[in-house]
Length: 421
Ligand SMILES: [Ca+2]
Ligand SMILES: [Ca+2]
Ligand SMILES: [Ca+2]
Ligand SMILES: [Ca+2]
Image (cartoon, rainbow, N blue to C red; front, side):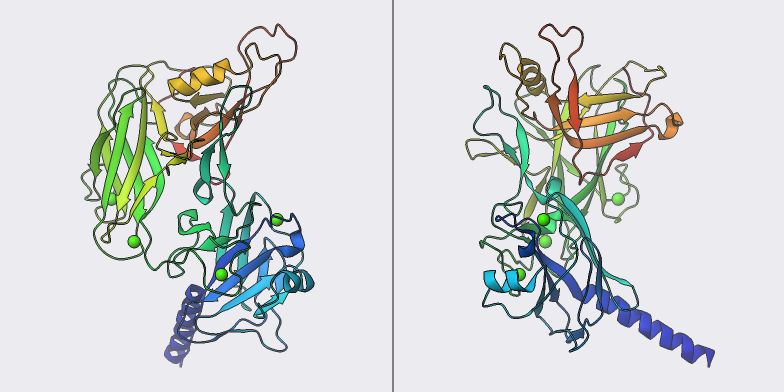
């Protein structure tokens, strides 16, 4: 009897696991161009081989809504269901779309939100934590310039510019922004296949780390990243690095063979080593990963210059530093290219007014001295830095800076050597 019961439970769990993988959040209109929150919607897609009854399933974070049970709500195999904020607003805007339910409480943030869908047993069916920056957006250079200076900002056509956020490969991990893009169709494709849908996407690059976080001039630096593709097959992963200001990058192949400081062989973590550099050197690096179908992703993604050109300039950075910091106060360290540091320092000089353009991509390294040193160092990539306002025309001393962390970049905690001041 116990065996039969166990088998029943196992079958139930397997069915649940299967269900979890089959209904996915496939489209999100989180910031309509009209700024009218009643025009928001979420689209669900059933990628499985059978119809699925989603009656009583609930959105429990992001917005609050229970999918109607009378009559039952069914998503047919291969089909879609729109869950809209407001029935009247949705019908008015999308009169041809009838496969929807509506009337949620709350609204989707225009900046970042975790949307959670649970089944009637309160299992999490799907969860998407979208943002309007990082992998969910593009890095754009400001145009026009602000008092002669151009900074960088995050841009997504889905963030108030008339497009929705669409899942690209519905059969693959939808928790990463690298599998989402702004729709090519204005107002999105609610209840219908996505305009950006593709059965094969370039490999997803995540978990980028370098060690030590602040290397000495005698230390080589191990660079690692996790690379996963939506199809089995061998991947080619490259690290591109140069000293700040050097004309060209050096290309190094990365390996997942357990012999390149990449943890275990075959675990998806790829590694490569950059040799020691002189004290003070700033090293800039990025990655490319190519799958068996020759689809290539670059991370960080190329940025869009004000000319419209794609430029590989908003990259990861680290700096070699010999100095040990032993002070009692926490310190925050912001690493930027020399060209960006010069630009930042020139802002607000002789302008008579205070402009606030964010400057280029940064790597921020903090040290919180209240914690043990072994856990005291954290790294956040792709910060934005502003000159803080100076009160008084003759503000003396170091100039203030305001730093903003990218909401979709998780801080990386390290066990690096102490950070210098
Ligand atoms: Ca919104
Ligand atoms: Ca759609
Ligand atoms: Ca692929
Ligand atoms: Ca590995």
